[in-house]
Image (cartoon, rainbow, N blue to C red):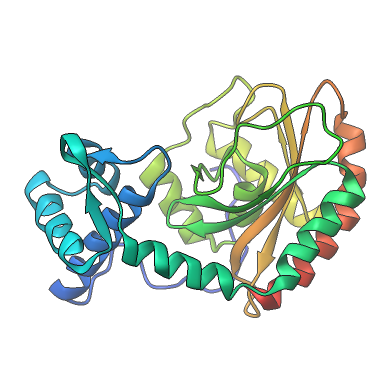
Length: 265
């Protein structure tokens, strides 16, 4: 990389480090559970195995235990779906979410007239946890709550990367690569680092058809008290209605929303 990465807080422990076999087993179980809960379910065993990146025998054993505990339910044709215990847990979490989160996102949506997303950092990607469609928009975006998206092609993802320690950014690039999703995607370390530098200077990121054709977004990170990114918020538009210059006028409202959300996440 042409410019050394020196930003962010002190690096945390390496992602690959494991302190015990139990920890490794727990990590695999959580990945299997996440794969079962992914959109498009119920899922076949092969789909769960691939998404969780575990051997088939391991996935089968974990699924059997999760079924017994009520977190997973086996459907017809050997497919696996969300069980009643997991649905109950989801309801408890949703019910406990501060009402002000919805208010903050709603205020941002009304201020911009556009679709608003809230996503959390989830390993090597981000996961959408809230989506509010713009009330007056003549279109609907394809994104869904629960969808995982790359870091380097999305406005939220790039704003997260801009606040991560240098060592973690390099580790993420080494693990995932920089695959292009559109002709505008940043697929080299040099191009990505130049964009991250701009994001740190101005406080927000732009996705200018980098993740999906005709979609333009502005995003900013939500930071923990120690400065580490938790996730982020984005305002999503379409290129034929909102110009690159106009979308940047949403920055003040966006940054105010991320600051207000920080103590709630």
